[in-house]
Length: 340
Ligand code: P6P
Image 1: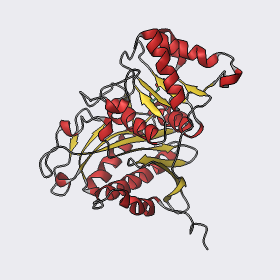
Image 2: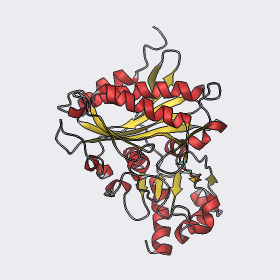
Image 3: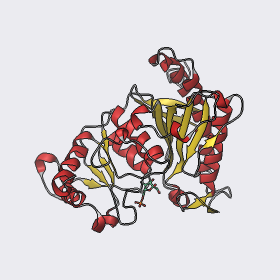
Image 4: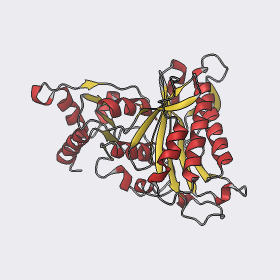
């Protein structure tokens, strides 16, 4: 009995769970398999970032006007290459590219899916060795297979997502994803180069003790957020307060900790980002899908993130997500103090 006999790899899991989707022909399975491959390639580069000359500014600036680090470009390129090789995806939207990337080769243009991603979120943390992540969202295309993909293929509500997930490149590298039948986490075992099922059927606690928000922006927060922060800091034995403030500044890392331990992550409107900083298509929607599938909640302050009809590829929204009871409490403060 080898040590790995009782461990299920990502590929074994994907094949086994294909039956969750009657009539599936393996397209999504193949797409998820290729995401796993790209994740391992990016992980190898992230782990060596301090050693190989891929640190520091790439010199270009992405559509967000942010200095693009070489590892951003590396991750963007390798995920796009893997998705093109897979043949199940006809186009990609990425934080690093203003326009959608259309695959017009004979195989991919018949692809059933479109793929939105933040290839390396939190990249400002690369140089200081803080956990970073890839976030992705998968939709069925709306345009006919065989035709050139269109922007409308992407501008679908988050409820239409077929799958969503993230890879966190941290003390260990994990792939966490959902296809709408629960959330499962896989840890990369470098000794065999496989993602192995380590966190089956993740359920997030209904409440927690952690609140995650950049309090440096406090002065410009909506009043309801200010009041909620003070609520978190008050002593109240019955509701286990004061809570603990934990903020890494890397969405995947902050969300993943709260998903497992319970907690709330908030990125509200600020002076610099009056609509919030996080992007709906490839940060908030995938994270919201995972949060809800794990029994949590995700809102923009007034509605479910997943019901927002996107109007543009890179639009930003305020983001409140995590343990249901904590998000509901924030909603109460926003409603009372901001008439939201
Ligand atoms: P701030 C990283 O740049 C990011 O997009 C998310 O990963 C993170 O949650 C957020 O921005 C941090 O933003 O303004 O607090 O530094």
